[in-house]
Image (cartoon, rainbow, N blue to C red; front, top):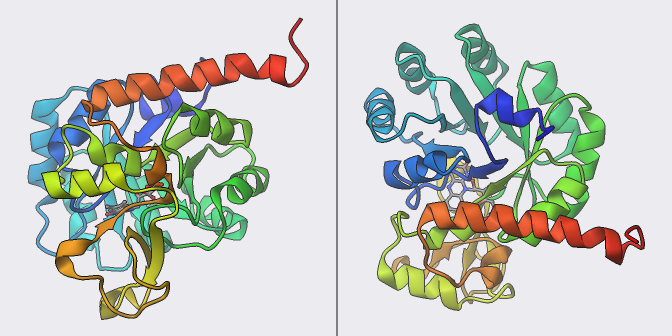
Amino acid sequence: MDNPILPMLGIEVPILLAPMGGAVGPELVSAVSAAGGLGILPIWWEDARVGEAINELRMRTAMPFGINLNNQYDQDRHLGEAIDAGHGVVSFFWGLRPAQVLRAKDAGMTVLQSIGTAAEAREAVDAGVDIVVAQGWEAGGHVWGKVSTMALVPAVADAVPGTPVVAAGGIADGRGIAAAMAAGADAVWVGTRFLLARESMLTDERRAEVSAATEAQTIMGKDPNERWRDSAMRWIGSAPPWTAVYPPEDGWQLAGQGVGLVHKHQPAAEIVAELWAEARTTAANLPARLGLAP
Ligand SMILES: Cc1cc2nc3c(=O)[nH]c(=O)nc-3n(C[C@H](O)[C@H](O)[C@H](O)COP(=O)(O)O)c2cc1C
């Protein structure tokens, strides 16, 4: 496969598991990595034991995996523990911290940065980032930008030629993967689809909610948590948009608009294989629809 991101990350298929706090733990990360994609572990909270988590993942899989740090918070200790463990791949989200990028690069890490505009992609690349993750508005969880995936990905690909682009937000099946790659992405970052992976940390109640929700049933609201500075986040729910309160604790699940495509409970390895097979079938069928095939 002529795709530069595969050798950069040491993976076999260009499918990255989106880090999702509360849903993605070592079991799901290692399952996606073992299936040839890249599992990425969110490990950014204050008392996170980064070194221990990396060691646990190394025992679970010999394949590459990433860790995900949150620039909303001080992550110096977290990054230091990853460097001490000799870890290879780090993803940063919620803003760019050039000093952290330099520190990770000096330690020989491959650095991914989540961005929400083409200008932010350029800043990230100027700071030394290896791979940009273009997160569109339809994404689940905390959403940094305001531009939809379909408009963002080609703009980012044009803005940073020579730097691999990973598309995130609303990609929940192989058609979405083919579309994102046609739009200029080198790989995809899939979150909501993996909420129903057998290895995800969701309870049965939350799984039922995800599998029943339609694409019209997520809303974007403001996170009232002071430390997240009123940021926007997307969840399954029925409250009016832009409420300033958390939805009731027992009645919400962060998820993206792609949730309308997510119904099956499957092992993560099966999801990876199915996504990739569907993407290839979709692409193979396109020439006829475009009037290119005999
Ligand atoms: C439950 C949930 C938790 C999330 N937590 C994180 C996180 O800890 N770190 C992060 O970078 N992104 C987080 N996100 C955003 C995802 O990494 C990703 O950008 C998003 O899920 C992609 O859109 P999709 O859900 O439509 O596939 C979260 C998303 C969800 C749904």
